[in-house]
Length: 405
Image 1 (cartoon, rainbow, N blue to C red):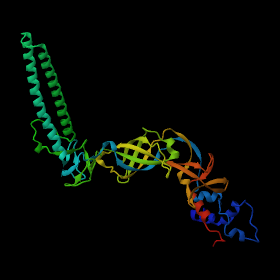
Image 2: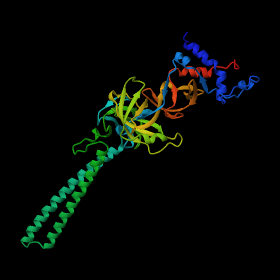
Image 3: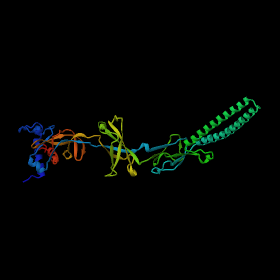
Image 4: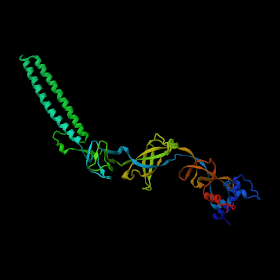
């Protein structure tokens, strides 16, 4: 009658006393002194013997470790952050008081929108300088007109020999001085206009300073108000943070990889980003930058990924996984992933070492792609490992011996 898998497992467990002997060299244990096999500190079993009939009944199958060419993606954990080129941290340009604050966190704003108004004495001073310069220009223009008229009259009188040439030269000097005075006043007007423009105010000769006494705070681009860092009535100085606005239609993702893997990535390669909030959905991006410094504590290097954010689904500080396309195919040793088992906290496979014997062997693994796992250390090409039924071998190896019971 054909053995069932349960009977096979029982049969495999029954060979545990023999396994210890095999692990220690293959000799038979002395019949008169069984104590050493059960003593504390004895070598752990490392092999299982099962004949072909029982192996077939238990569904134990094997596969050969082979080398393949593949460009494995590099996976890493990441975090969504703001695109700093599309994020504005708005601050005060002047010393004054927050007069109005027109937005709240979460509000959408257009480019150039006035989000706050600041009241400051510097605006009054700038208006005063502007109108003073306008008055000076009017006076300088009048003096220039008079000097030119005097020059024309002097030239006529000199032609009629009714005035000395020295008087004409003096009149011409007065014209030059008046012209220079007009140019100086124009420069003052320009300076006053630029100062007002720096505060976001357009200077006009017919402007009413009382209607333009606040400094507007505007957004350099459209986006979303992320933070409001002040309140109406707060005193501010130049540089005081007011608001954070960011265009979330694009974001960055930062991730870290081990320094030993830096050679496998290259700027410009495509990246796939996935978030637990959106099962089955992925976001394509590009590896924009690879850090130039290794963190001395973690021995890791930071990657920066740039990507579009349709519907603003990816939120800053959201945890994601990234998969970076490898630079070029490489030769790797692989076995079916189902051959892997975990024993004593390490990954192991069972390697066929004879017609009816499997040896436990610890391995170091790499990436798993399409059901095939990379074996970095522990196997060689051509090794035959148990795949289906490997768990039965593990169970038999872990079963207690009669001396343990």
